[in-house]
Length: 220
Image (cartoon, rainbow, N blue to C red; front, side):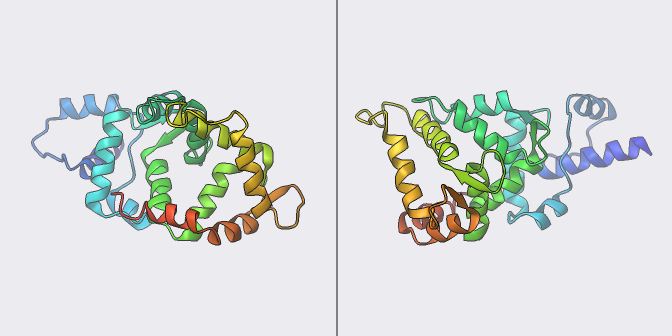
């Protein structure tokens, strides 16, 4: 029974990365299984739970497995991978916040399922889905509202990530001014925090935010 589960796990993984080969012998199977900590769910299940096609899932899985051969990524590796996209700045803090958002099980690691579920929302979700995901990213302590301090932490991390070369004339207080501007628009009842309803309503009325979300529609 155990051997059958191992065979099914390997088959599911190969279906994802498009590399299934019936000629692979059992010695190679055992070696591959021994180097992997986590196997993703079946292709059919992932297609049902996301908005990606089989081909898209295979492309995503190949890239994920190439960077994370064990099948999961911890925060340190996630930061290292993310830093490659922003060599001009320090992306470590923003990558930390992003990792927290992807790590929905709060177990200190992101599996392919975690990654692809989040990506499906960001790239293919409805406007409400995407805004809910963004709110969760900003709500650092997950208490259901965003404070100025939380938004400021996110803003500082974004400016750090983009780097001085991107914004050479940016003043040190720019992130705080950005946050104050956001709160004036979003904190409707002026109670010092932004709720999910205030966040979604304000974002939907902001043409720049709506346009930026539409940029993700055809990324893959």
